[in-house]
Length: 396
Image 1 (tube, rainbow, N blue to C red):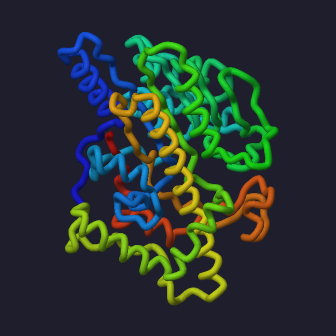
Image 2 (cartoon, rainbow, N blue to C red; image 1 turned 180 degrees about the vertical axis):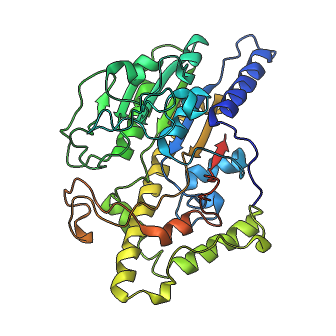
């Protein structure tokens, strides 16, 4: 693959697109032309090929619809980790300029990622300007639901103090999907963290549902900017039982076969070329696993797929709401992932057997392993020398 000679920040391109669409709306002959709504949907640790329109077998009809009616990009870059990428997305700056050259503040340890130098504070520094602050000056309502992960210790670092009108989500980087627990709870606007949840609580549903709530509760006709930052499919592996059931059987054939099939689809779509081949494998051959190992890792990928599937369903609910309100055609929707698929160390958080993932554990398994990560990033993997990772980017 060609070497990257310069780096584009996500926010820079995003702002250019927004300005272009806004200018188009202003220049329309109709005197009643309205500025477009803007929605940025961010997946978390999702691979290049996990969605249908990039060759994946996971059912993602709503994301695929965005691709079919919009623009599908295949060559786009980020900062390889959650926090720096989000800092760039929100500010249009290199992450070091925004104060998050590495990781953001940790819920359990306020100072662990603060090196007391400008580029490594662990939170968005006060002298940066966020997209929300800019959009607000342009007459937009500004909303955010989901994962913040750019500063949490001190309300001056929270979303409402950085340009957003409403917020519902997790300030930290990771949380249980089923029972967000101290100190990784749910925050609404500037309120105290919440740790009590109904039995059917699931963060993906809650983040998508509150995005819809913010839009429908808006009292005037001003345009809105929505930043919907799902934590799916970031670890831990936790999905709704009904979604897991729908994904059963997809991965019994193993990662070698699934990766080959994804590559074949990508070639047919014109996304890749056959002579490019696949990235160097970083996993064992499927046939070398024991039956128990195959069963274990098959279930892990099944849960991961269910997490992506649920995210797509909530995106569909959001689009249906926009259509019902006659706002879909005047809304710019951007979908992307903060970085490629991630193979965290193959260990568990919270203990427990695989069957206990959805039985009240704070954390399920932390990773679906290197084998499935290679599948998710088909045909690419992260180049550890250049810190380069592919990212999905769709416009509607």
